[in-house]
Amino acid sequence: MIKLEHVTKTFQTRNGNVHAVRDVSLEIQDGEIFGIIGFSGAGKSTLVRCINLLEKPEQGAVYFDDKDLLKLSEKELRLKRQEMGMIFQHFNLMRSRTVFENIAFPLRHMKMKEDEIQRRVNSLLELIELKDRKDSYPSQLSGGQKQRVAIARALATRPKVLLCDEATSALDPHTTQQILQLIRRINKELNLTVILITHEMAVVKDICDRVAVMENGKVVEEGNIVEVFSHPSMPVTKNFINTTNNLGKINELLENEHPLVQIDSNQTLVKLSYQSGNTKEALISTISREYNVDCSIIFGNVEIVHDVPFGTLICVLTGKKENMQKALQLCEDNQVQVEVMK
Ligand SMILES: Nc1ncnc2c1ncn2[C@@H]1O[C@H](COP(=O)(O)OP(=O)(O)OP(=O)(O)O)[C@@H](O)[C@H]1O
Picture 1: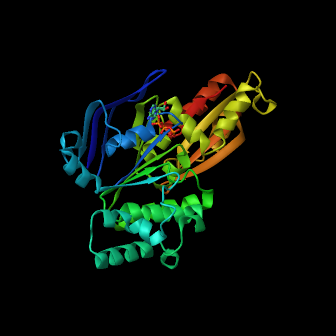
Picture 2: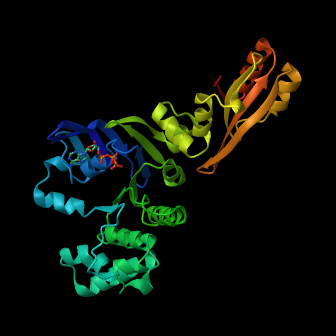
Picture 3: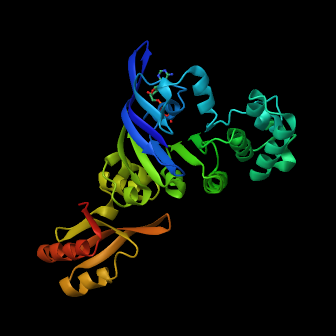
């Protein structure tokens, strides 16, 4: 549905050129929720704005339903843009207009007939469950309600794609969940393709089908969310995954040589990662019984990604070196990833 080919965007500033997006190629399928994650300044917003040409890339091509947007006339582009809705971190609602009029705004702009506007806005109000607030002004709404209104406004022209630029970053965790559920629901019910940019791995983990990780303007890793979670290859991806659990904390303890992670010469500190269902053996008791290797768990975490539980254990193993190697081999033979941390 959306294809980016070698998209590059550079900003000329007084302090020199800023290479916000560098040679990015991506393909987003019809009906999927595609996450773009990266730390602040990675180029996510610029990339997403290149999709609807709010920013014009100086190189590359942007295809939407096989049409190269950069080759369209102004008028054709305006029509194509109606097929792409967008929501923002700070909602961007018009303060002087009611909820109803905010949602109706793009329809009035299209010169739609009044009775059709009434029908469409009322059905959107029902979808976002804010029918009773249609005459309220944005200042009278909570952050979550404002974002729901922004979603309804973005959906008013019946777009095929919803671009979400940090749509939950200004919301508390509970409201974030509600907005993500709404996005998931409209994705399913309306078969709406969603491109969601965020700096929070928890958001990606909860609703995205696939994810691209950005760093310094480039996509450094991309894939199905379960695969990326189970086999992250780039340090930045591992960092993001660690933010959803306490593993980052363990690295801190290691750096600071905390007593909790101090080990003797006959010990080793390992990280064991497994996907539930992959392992049938009672591995910890097996390695203790068969190889005389004791296992002391200092940290454990189970993450659920798309209904698949991912477990991580940080353990201190105690035993003879050759036995330890056999024990770790047994783990790997049983699809448990082993990372020796110390
Ligand atoms: N209009 C602009 N003019 C100059 N530089 C810009 C402009 N827009 C973005 N940049 C720069 O491009 C780089 C990427 O910014 P961008 O906003 O795309 O990143 P981001 O990953 O979305 O970060 P954030 O989440 O903080 O917005 C940054 O260095 C930013 O300062």
